[in-house]
Image (cartoon, rainbow, N blue to C red; front, top):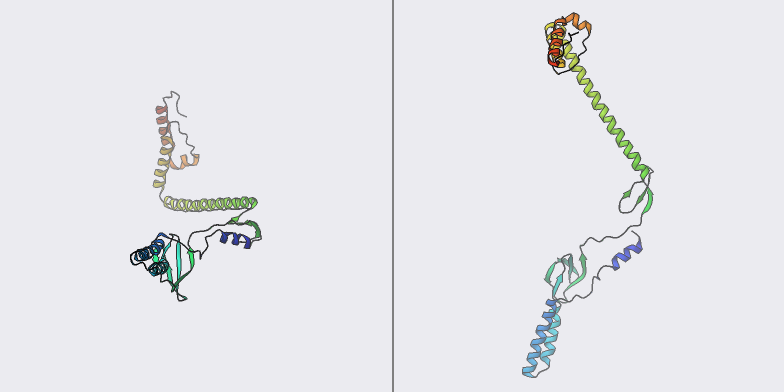
Length: 234
């Protein structure tokens, strides 16, 4: 913040040591003064009103009122004894003093944008936040997109590895158990042909080694029945 803007901000605040008149102080001053005036009227002695005025001045120094956002700094014979407020509080006249009123409100001020360099030698404009240039924003966006694509490919590769391990274990299970492999092949064929109009491509080696010719013929006949075709199955 520049010195000029700081001086302008401070000058816009209320003065710290300005005398503050409140209704309690006014009543504390007027009450002894009124009593002194009545005493003078009854006794005819003008000293009564002078005494009332002096007592009123002393009493008016005691009550103070701090606003909700303020705290009063209290010094007793020059020694700090604490903060008072908000609301009504009392001090000892000519013993306690209030050198300052602390304003607890958030005070904002404008900052002039200045160009500077980051630790990565990137030029940025600095005011209340760090303003990133449009070119740098675009580069950061591309970098984030590339990182997401990299992560997606890594996840896909890990999935492929897990699938390969599963197939390896399945192959080991079927290696010495041709019956289980045959049942699995029949289940795959059924799943592929149970839908109307489905097409299944089966290697000829599987037909010969597993004796699937009869099964394929039955499946084709079933499909022909479902579709209502009169043409003989191939």
